[in-house]
Image 1 (cartoon, one colour):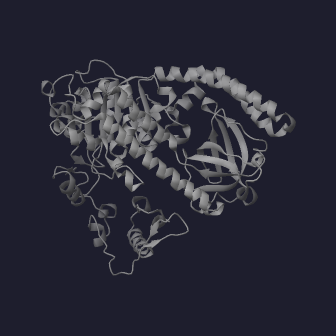
Image 2 (cartoon, rainbow, N blue to C red):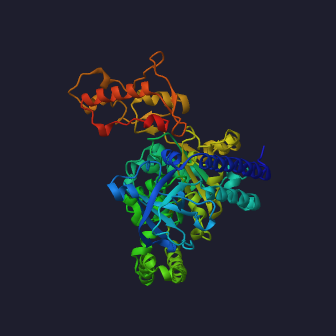
Amino acid sequence: MPINVQEFASQQRKLLEIERNYDVEERSRLLSTLTNNQLAQRGLAILKLKVESTATGLGGKMYFRLVTLESINSGEDLTNVDKTKSGDIVSVKWNKEDEKNKDLTMNLTGIVYKVLQNKITIAFKDDVEFPDGFEEKTLKIIHLTNEVSYKRMIEAIDHLEKNYDKMMNFQTLIGSFQPTFSQSIESIPNAQYFMENSQRFLYNQFLNESQIDAILLSLLSEQISFIHGPPGTGKTCTLIEIIQQLNKPKLNFIEKPLRILVTAPSNIAVDNIVERLSNAGVDCLRIGHPARILESIFKTSLDYKIKYSNESLIVKDIRKEIDDLLASVSKKRGKRRKVWSEIKLLRKEYKERERNISSLFIKNSNIICSTLNGTAQKLLRDEEFDVLIVDECSQALLAECLIPFPKCKRVIFAGDPFQLPPTVQNPNAKDLEETVFDLFKKFNKKEYKNLSRLLNIQYRMNDKINNWSSNEFYNGKLISHHSVKNHLLSDLNKNSKDSLLSIPFLLIDTLGANCFETVQDDSDDSKYNQGEADLAVEHLEKLISLNISQDSIAIISPYNAQVQ
């Protein structure tokens, strides 16, 4: 039965509001019931900060580097900073607030740009008004809920409801539109042919048959296609080849280069693709807040290109003038208001000139990379693309995937429908865990095989580990590559005969071993089990004693308290 778009949109909006309200109310509850020190212990606040320096960034943003009083006085690092990361939205307040005197209260919202061992840099929008004494007084930062993401998802649902008739990509997703192909798959050579002639037709000569098959489908399908498989099957490798073929075709059935929007739900997933593209010599433009972009690929970012391009010479003088004025604010106490007025005018001019340069870079970029949420920003509002690629789509909320849909006629999804769904905190909003894969399978039983491809060779696990995953989720279709099929820890230490190194996995049953689960009440109610932690350490020490490098070992846990 076809989906009712109005009912679908209404249900999605309702679920998003439930989740948003829960998120906001839970954070508000913590902020209103816990002391500053308790918030700091939970990683929700950093106290006793002072402004060390100021600077101007992309879009006229103001960057304030803060340092703790403890580090100034004793040289100690920031405490409880491990839960504060680049990209977090925070409120900056006076460290001690006077509720009776409103003139002494302050609440500025900014984004964490960079976190070092004893310093933290906050970026503020260009229109923020800073109160007297901001540069001299002691400050604190409090973590906030990111409501912008919810707003953008609801806007995407609203757009879908109003423009459903024009969105053939979404209609195909829900089985209401018959998919079309630029050529029939039968009319071109099969994957085996291209694998045998990889040097002539492919950028990556080491792709396997299932990867090439997925590439061919994605390049021929005119509305949607799905590439799926567990971790280690080369989904990202496959996407990189697709992007290269769309950008500069080597396959002769692609008529011309196409413009591509590459997305994923998280910044780290986007940066992973950007890094792979850069390593392959492919030019791309990374859009996003510089605080959320890895340093290793920062040269691909819009912020970097603007800062160091010839076109930006015209704004460098304005930036220097703003920075000089910022540095003088605290010294000109009697002229503070006048100085801030000058800064405000300069920032307006700076922002306008920079916007024109940004637009030029975006217009001239054939491959743009951003998070799903990031595609809603003003810079990309009027941009159109031939192809949208959504990596890690199984970890994205359905509404999140819809944000960039209106910009593109054709969508290529990649992910693993059998991994954990996106995180939903409120039990009453659990239906938000339905992903784009789930929606596709529900309404496309006939077209599922025609529009999706499984990557069936994995390059990560011993075959005995692979077999369970393959039989449990993939109908026994998952195959181990010969390079990993029989690999064991004993390969890392061929001199040892210890049996521990000759088994691919080990399960330790802790029932009856006095390993009791405990809730950590002075943190965030996270769980831990001291007995199991001791067992893990004991096993770790045994592996190290057998000359297994610490770099080759990882310990993971679903609970923060257990990790600590």
